[in-house]
Amino acid sequence: MPNIRQLSLEELEQYFLDMGEKKYRAKQVYDWLWLKPVLSFEQMTNLSKELRQKLATEFSFPSLELNLTQHSDDGTLKSRFKTFDGHLVEGVLIPTANRLTACVSSQIGCSLSCKFCATGYMERKRNLNFDEIFDQVVLINKQCLETYGKKLNNIVFMGMGEPLLNYKNVLKAIEKITSDEGLAMSARRITVSTAGVAKMIRQLGDDKVRFKLALSLHAANDLKRNQIMPINETNDLKSIIDALNYFYKQTGNEITFEYILFNNLNDSLQDADELIKIYRQVPADLVNIIEYNPIDAARFQKPVEEKVMIFMDYLEKHRVNARLRRSRGKDIDAACGQLANKDH
Image 1 (cartoon, rainbow, N blue to C red):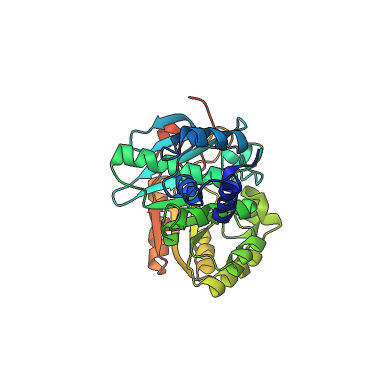
Image 2 (cartoon, rainbow, N blue to C red; image 1 turned 90 degrees about the vertical axis):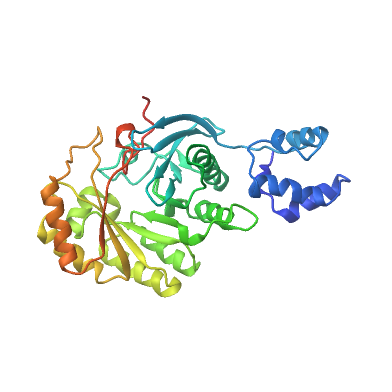
């Protein structure tokens, strides 16, 4: 059966007219799908029971189901969602003093095999459909309202998978999230993070997207980046820098760099100099320096605090807008690089 969320409003209107129903029924259903989103026909309470049953016999309504929620000591919530075909995917609600952020996934597993990331050790099963990405936001927003009494402020595509390798679904999900007929969130409050797919960064520029872009850099020379991020072998730093500059030229959107500090790998002052050099080649607004979060599959360690502060001070001294991002949700494997559908 066709997935009802694949239909446009016009297609729904035609469907209801063909079955002898009033045209306005289409708008009622469309609002239930996107504006006040529900996850089943049964919840569409302003439709008659007979009409809801008829829709259920003619359309599928695959939606995410909340499978497990874990609560961190710092207020972070990690949720495991089950897809209609039995796969599991994780999303995180991250509370801080001034914002509530949903970290959402774009794929089930990942094909990029970054050496420091738990998801990178999983097999990529499939891309998430746009409505499954949308459901993550809906369900995390519901948790946000129930736990903190407020709606989400921000969305980051930094969960499982590489968003730019699921390009169409990610963009369509963001279209629904930002639409006045959907969740009406500002595109400026959405950040898509990429490991560096140069061709698709350029495509974002051509599509004149309004959301923010972050690059997971983590090493500022090709030799080191090749070691920890195999994607760099086909998307080297020069090609990524060229793509980021093209993206900025097309959109005017500044770029954020993400840089995890690894002990004795990328945390020297020489590494800082290389990072500064890249920062100055791209219209970047911020470098997020991130604490490394240990995973079972890798032997990386985070530097001692003194070394982190020396690195940060050096960046500041050279007028780099850098921020140290403390990890949240480490005790439930919800922090950066830890999502892997582990059972607890």
